[in-house]
Image (cartoon, rainbow over all chains, first blue to last red; front, top):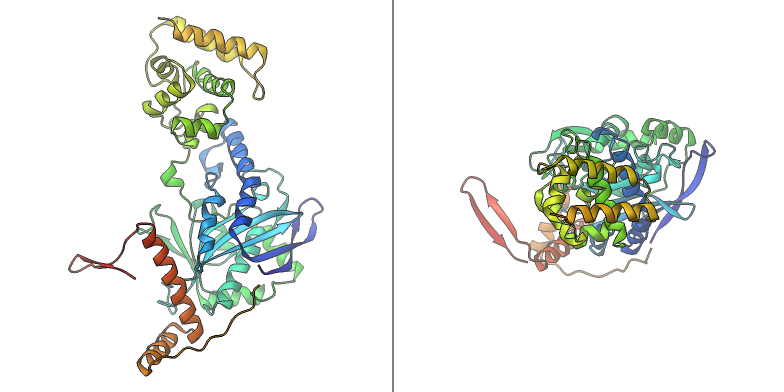
Length: 206
Length: 159
Length: 69
């Protein structure tokens, strides 16, 4: 397991707080995180439905279960990334580092890092918690994904299928290119890709 | 090992403000599992809360968690959550019968209560509304809830 | 992180040429190509062991060829 100190936003103080970025999580870490996240996520979603929240305000990922994804980490092609603060995982991401290639020019056919799963802790998600605990989890995980892609020799190239609610984040904040609805995706989600050039711009600013 | 992450606090604050704790999730299986969609409210009638309450109280009286009941009844946890919260999933008769079987409730009556079958008498509606009005809590079953549940289940079992 | 281990790899000229070409095409180091090949081999092997099938499809002839590892 490899780790480094990073900073995230502490909404309690409005300032910046140190956190630990783990870039080689094992399956056990995912199982432990799910123990805390699962009940919180389901309870919060239940509360939303009870309060009559319209569907576009209900989280689209509430049925997730990191425990089920943990076995992927037994394979070399997958890598688990997590942000830990105050003894809890504040964000988790699963990356696949083999078997996916870029579709955008001039990177067509070149390897990229694919993001199959990513999630902020439910208490850091506005849709589930009106007063989120920590901020900047998404952008930190995204930055880590770009850096993993660099370390793998994939030059920052990334690909992912965004849930509709997260499209704004990947398009407007992460500056990924929106490649449109992917007919080959079983759920017909929009595919987003970060080219080598776009990743260089992102890292220059970061 | 990846390179050192950005230490610029100004950049972090700017990006975190833009992110604004909004959803970041990708992939997922929402379509496969059938995410809740209240486009067509299933439970419109006055007895609607009774169905939600009956399932919840009967589950708790059986000392089952939502997960446990879903597993025992072999139904999706999403459906059960939607049912108990008076939600709006398109309910399958099979789901209602599975719940009825697991919680030992009369299936056809439960189907009426769910709105999937038409209630045959005014008495039925009245009993359901009375039951719904008597059951409010969400933690341990109170004495009052026990009595309301027993009375209603007795009624459902009649005829 | 656990320390990396080094090994010597004996490749025939043809194998080395294939590796060099792949590295050039994919803009990866030779080590990165081999590492990715190992990851894919393991991933596919695990899925085949789970009962899944791997096949290549020819869209023109509409024929699918089942692959094994």
